[in-house]
Image (cartoon, rainbow, N blue to C red; front, side, top):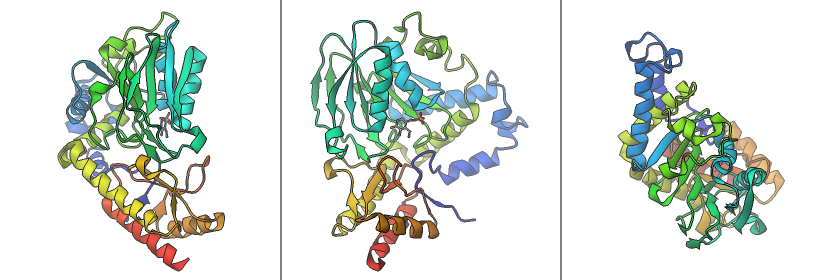
Length: 360
Ligand code: PMP
């Protein structure tokens, strides 16, 4: 069996070791004679999986006791609504930095709930650059500042996070969480759909500072109030048990590699391989992002014509590369090289890009 060269944007590649471990345990998890999916979410065996995932997240991301770790459903998209419903209270303003379609969507949901303001936007330059923001002083009516740490569609990424005074910084880290170490303490809240760097789709990770929980107005539905989930260890209702199990295996795998620092080194090497091909192509390949805002997770580029792009994607497909078409809203090409994409697969893509240029 040959594994595909999987460059999907999400759901995306999972570590082979994780899939193999899940396969080994598929019919009999921990001597229970059941698959994890068949366990009661109130059983000791499932609870062990659930709590192990939380403990590993605390360890790998260095999350202090000041923060709750929640496993929610509804994708990162539901967080676009839950954040304002819980935190954008009467008389407050939700501030947003727009760096692509996902931050636009987050803003759109906040507007349905309360007052918003756009602090900075990269829309005018077609989201090729992350706005420069080092220090942000927010007024006393600020509810929070929301950013998207990595822009999956445009291939840009914050290289460092701003110092924010006056209100909590909230980040959608769906497409780059755990790609490199970062200081959780800079944030009031972090959230991420699991299906890129953390595991399969179906579970959304929320890391939220405890003082931000319990502020939602009475009118907020029970399931959309962070307090409901934090007060019940994310077991108020049936959690996505299989997704959380696979997440726990991914976390164990990252731990076994030497943690997030080790993963960062491999990610840097992988990204350099592709950007070097783009930069050395004499304009045959054009990177969408400006070099100072390039993502190590989603490498976006165009060729000089639609015809060349079509030929590139067709030949890539023939050679076993999957998921290289750019997002339907921007076109071109995109290679998503999340944590679980092996270095060798990125090397193979870099070689393919060079040989395509030579032969086209
Ligand atoms: N934010 C970002 C940065 C994303 O890349 C995505 C999905 N690609 C989302 C939010 C939406 O996530 P979900 O599909 O889990 O709602």
